[in-house]
Length: 539
Ligand code: TTP
Ligand code: MG
Image 1 (cartoon, rainbow, N blue to C red):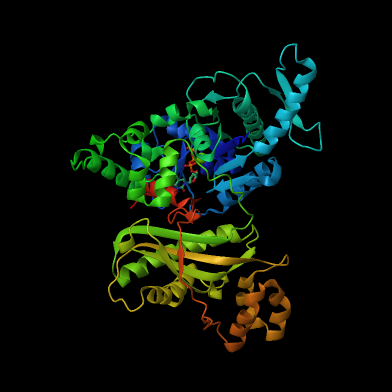
Image 2: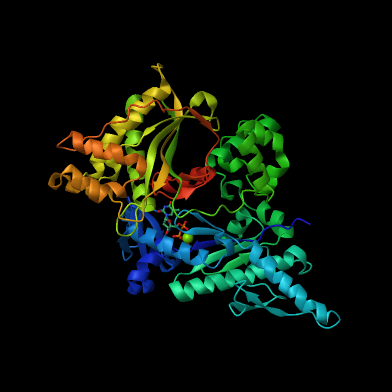
């Protein structure tokens, strides 16, 4: 029989605040918030108890709560470092490293193999005692090789909250596996708290969406199990916009389609439309979802409303294979607007590259080779195909001697705008709904220092042969000739695109690896819409 997965979702509590508290424990006792770009991006639970809200305008929060302490959170490096540390620490506990990271503060753990191994131990325990009392606890092994590494695990009780408050009819089969999952979740969270000092909220269920939603139902520093037999009841009470990956755009498309299909009344006031999962499931059908959202999104979203999420845990590689930042629009028709958006996206892209591709010493861990610009014509709709063009990524992005502003200017004028011209071809008039800038084809840096930036910084004091010796081996193979060539050509570093013919046109499905342009959080592209709602306050 095919068994379902056991998935644990972890979300660090008030994450940026917890990081700040880690460095300054005095903050634990007072109400404080972390501010970015005029917005309270998060606040600790002491502040939340007073009524301070996440994503409130900073000035408004201070008006309401004059004693609120504000910590500046513009520099993401501490959050990045803590996030990576917690990720690696957690991953070390999960067999096969099956841990997917979502943004800075969420992890999905596929612990199926660990559970099945321990269930087999439990079955063995039962054999000789078949006629006596069932075993009430087992020693849950955290290692296949070291029998003494693990914890004592009760098997007749659930650790933490029950998503719908009810226990399943029996503790057998998949239910028993989730019971063990709940104790494993508790153990992992305790290890993280005891050894790293961070509290988290955990969810345990059979897929990522159910585990995430279960975890979010009791916070902070709690955990919740959702047994499959209660999944539909649990979901039915939610507004569809609260299902992860369903954003306000998808929600309004779905509601428009439902209400048009049923009574031809054009309901424009959101409050008039019942958006609960229960109602939407009963008023719509899969075909309506597919007709309005397209085959792939329609399928996925319909399944989600029924607790089905087949995405599985995709272990996050130490280094991403690509980094992309995008934004969507109702309609973008002028070159000036495109230019402005590309500037904004480029700042976020650089931030993201610094976070994901540099180590804590500031050395580059990997060098993307290619810049890719994608767009989506309005004529193909919000869920239509993208078109992309690529070119070699200008080396200036690795420079530490240029300001962020001058790197962004260079990227926009010399990379993105020429690619945009190629994308729209001869069309003088265009109308697009999406812009995505990406660096792809990331080459891992050799173990030795790979800081191309120091190459630029020191160049005036070195001749070419010194450069060759000191820096060349540090560069990815395909960058070497070009970078050394750039240096040799000019007293002041200049950067030319390779005049190669490798631009391509790619038609691709929506990617699952998008980043928020405001805060840089990585998420599935469906999640981006929902997430952007958080930022709307600041727009
Ligand atoms: P969240 O997990 O949404 O929030 P949180 O961890 O602060 O609080 P909770 O206890 O409710 O989980 O986001 C994680 C961090 O990401 C948060 O500490 C701040 C940051 N963040 C942003 O910068 N922008 C955003 O829009 C959101 C939602 C979060
Ligand atoms: Mg959190």
